[in-house]
View 1 (tube, rainbow, N blue to C red):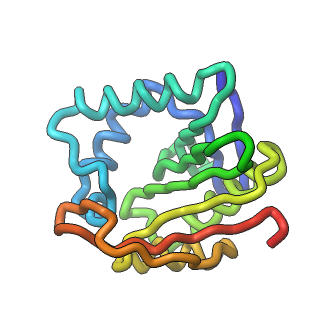
View 2: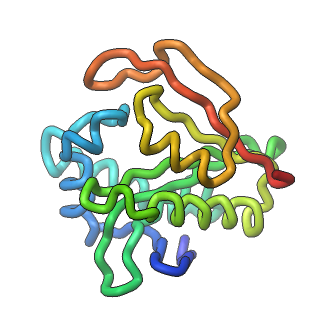
View 3: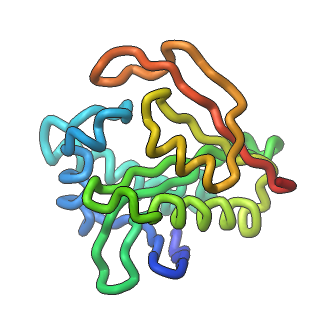
Length: 179
């Protein structure tokens, strides 16, 4: 069972639980957070619950390969978003990170702060060699976060992401343990 709790100066990253359902449904239902996300807006809270149960199942495997954390302010258990790290093949010692913060908490440095902690966790505790992330071309906020954390843009894939607005190009970012 994943009981890992990560802390930064302003944030707590903790495994998600079923108690987070209402918040996660609200987060996934926002037009603003859906704009560059491939999940789409859930039709019902039951759809969100199925996704949440899948994430909790993955979090609780004996050998966890998909970690999904709630991002909370450390001043009172207020969830402001989600962040995850999904491990790749063991031999390659790599992973992919993702994050989604509520629009009310954009432009405050929380995404950068939480991603820096996930990168630290990946390199120092999971002993990874390489961590990657993908980002839609027009997602300037996420591009800025990825670059502020030291990730390097390595790729431009054409029409990769099925977004609500249509197919979008994708930037591929990565950072190495030696960076």
